[in-house]
Amino acid sequence: MFQLSLPSQPKVPLANCRIAQIPSALRVRPDPPARAHRPAATGSTVDATSNNGATVAPAPAEQQQQEEHDTQASPGTRRASPRINVIKGTRWEKGIPPVMGAHLMASGSVAPISTSKGAGQGITPHMFLYPEKEITNTSILQYGNGESGAAGLAEIVQSAAADAIEKKGSFTLVISGGSMIKALAQLAADSKASDFSKWHVAWADERNVALSDPDSNFKGADEAFLQKAGIPTQQVYSLKEGLPVDETAKEYEGQLLRIPQQVLPRNSAGFPIFDLVLLGIGPDGHIASLFPNRSQTAARKGWVLPVSDSPKPPSERITLTLPVINAAKEVGIVAFGDGKAEIVQRALEVQALPGALPAQLVRPEEGRLYWLLDAGSAGNLRSGKWEDAKAFPRST
Image (cartoon, rainbow, N blue to C red):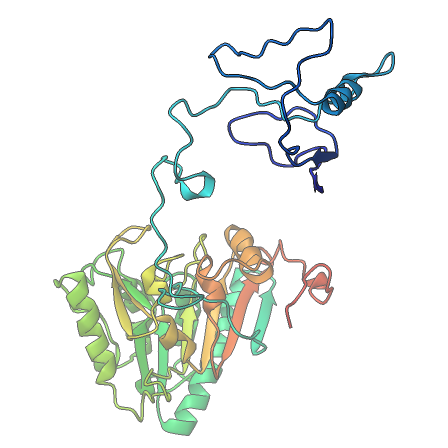
């Protein structure tokens, strides 16, 4: 004799039936030994033939007694039958499909067989990765208003220029457009502010338009600063007009590559080390023309890349790559005004997925990062709680 135990409440029902309540233990007895047929007791009759003509042997007396005992119940109670009651009913009229559940895609088609070679083997890595360490070489400078912020930016530029000219006889500056041009215009008004003949000026990004076009970053800088400062034209690296954007990017990278290394040194990875890079920040967190979750933002090679589908018009642009920006001695992100408050708070206080906020990927490897803010752009920051581990938990 052996005993088979079944749970009283099955956790997972059969796919094509419902299970009635069954006892917690079901005794299964072996078939009784063969014995000679005996007639039924006196006064009783046995129908030895079923509907299909098969002969049915009467059950032994002790088996009949056990079944009668199992089916009896005390008043007001009902004894469970030691049998599984299968109720017909299925969602698959043509039978259970050969592939079940997770093996079917949402469309209902069979999922392809995995070709994985193992964890992390033979896969294409994600474009963006979390930084391996936190940056500590960052300063956040807050000014009372945009005008005082522009004056503070002018001081940073002047200091960086003096230091570079003293050490190597030249100063390399990378700019975009926007409010930083106003700060540079203040410097140009003072001829004694710096030796502008030693300056070399390039662009972090530029629109692929004519240099006289109002959308050109060069046009705004030239009118407000470059001409007044008297920087030699051969040391101002502007786009070559009239080329497709791919060729424009290659031509501009060629201009930068031709700058002598005593003026523009290279790091161990071959990227240029600009003395100072000044960037704005867009409402989506983009810097230069490196937009969220774009391949250009994830690029780890090259100095200059084309952008043919910018989400912000004009659509065709060129941009420096992040490795070039992060190779600089100093990088400044300039954000003045109430309109920058939301993105400044997100960039400085919210850890986004890698690539979602390009400004968070600005991490100078050997240099220093400055955030230049005014009261308006810093209005949403909770800097008083930055050292609170609960409010701003850190992984290191």
